[in-house]
Image (tube, rainbow, N blue to C red; front, top):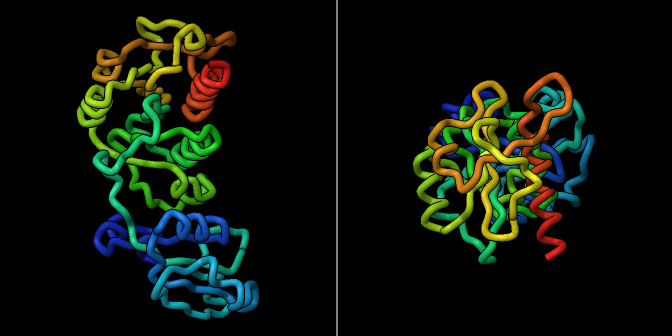
Length: 249
């Protein structure tokens, strides 16, 4: 429960919690090491467990009462895994194409928004997700829950704004910063080359560093009375415009 609830404990132990059959199986598929698998016999049988373990995983049967005590989600699937964390390093990002499509999110704070961004990138089969100056650690259980396991299906790296700008330049990736300042309408740009879509927070937007370093600043025209939308929605609009352009080229 300490690992589940406290970021400091996750960093100290190098462990985190995964709950749910789909989420655990996705983590195993992406070579996360499952240290221990807790299962509730009232909900899931021991015969089902092979898909949710890695080599030398400890398997522990727990009662329904214990499971309900430690389960994070209301819906129950009877499986909780304790897994080893991985480093989200820019050095580990590899592209299988010369024209990768990347999402960069600067200083996201709400785990639900981060989870939604990861789901969008999985749906679009984006090549990487880069998080600049994250305000919460990526193994927060709310991120795992809201991403429905897409934390494990995306290539992810974290870094400072400056580190990510340098990474994009070194890899010759065009960057499109979503901002109202000095920007063109998003659908008028070409995303068929190596492309990074950069989004900021709804309150503060993007830092001047990202805006000034961008190949082009872009905006999504607002036709109502407000001048912004949820960051995950904005990211989805631009990412799928990039996918549309690529599908027709």
